[in-house]
Length: 125
Image (cartoon, rainbow, N blue to C red; front, side, top):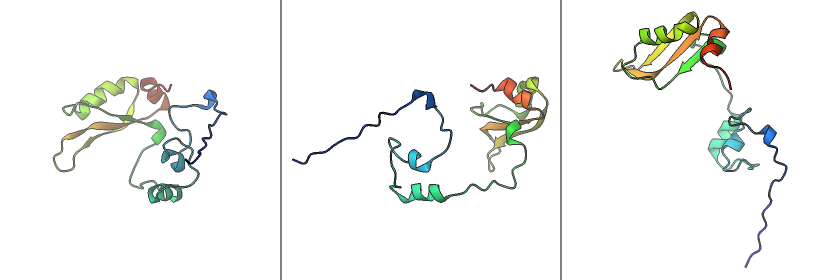
């Protein structure tokens, strides 16, 4: 019978733990336990060499924009504006709709004029 050994990482520091990755590492994301040192497939390799190029057609300031999801399909743009305008002045609101049917897809983007409005309705943890 072949003898195998297992190496256990013992330098774990819970102070560094976060439920959300601080830096995206495709190699760790593609690894079941985050310990891979070589890409195991072409998708991981493509993610490693990929570079993000923002869409030039997107307007607005991402630091002032709030993403709202799980909206009722019957929710109107006017209702979203009514609810979220109590936190501050809205510069731009986009209720995303299906291009064919025109029905709401259940999410929206709200761009406020001031950052304090964003933090008022969506405080960071």
